[in-house]
Length: 235
Image 1 (tube, rainbow, N blue to C red):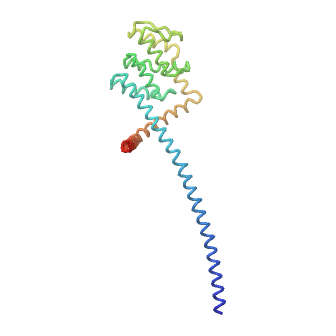
Image 2 (cartoon, rainbow, N blue to C red; image 1 turned 45 degrees about the horizontal axis):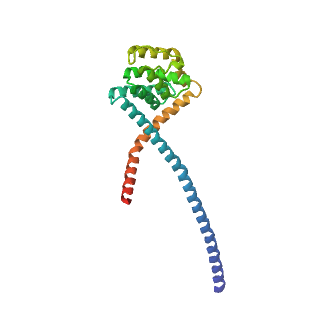
């Protein structure tokens, strides 16, 4: 009787061990699968976040450089800088041009010696011209700046005549009236037509990315400083 019990118990133990081995293999496969899935999920979440962070930093960098360029062209005139950047932000709401593009155009006008009010007067008209002619905004600003701030009328090829002495209010008025007559309202109309509203939404999202990039810059600077110390130590 005892012998039969031992045989039965031994058989049950072997069967139990066999099932435990199968279960163990199953657990290992499940663990490996979960680990692989977790790694894939981590990558799928991390990669887009890293890309977004990089894009945000780039957006902030572009904005910061545009502001620095305008401030330099204005020779540090804080009042003019604040007024013109405010105009750039407002124009972004009603045109397809991002505020950093508008600031680049304003910088072009300032570099030719135009004052704050003259720049504010011409900037929307330059946007209208660039939109109507399918031109880069900075290129259009360059033509207007040269035409108003020098004796060369670079706008004559577009049928725009400018009169008055260089730097005079008469020359500014002449340019403004000519641009108004040919192109007024073009930038605003383009913002409302077709996919214009989508482009404007993109500009607003770009502003959000700039803010995020601004918050990330201190962390990036700390990282750069840490890496720089490491390089110095190795050198």
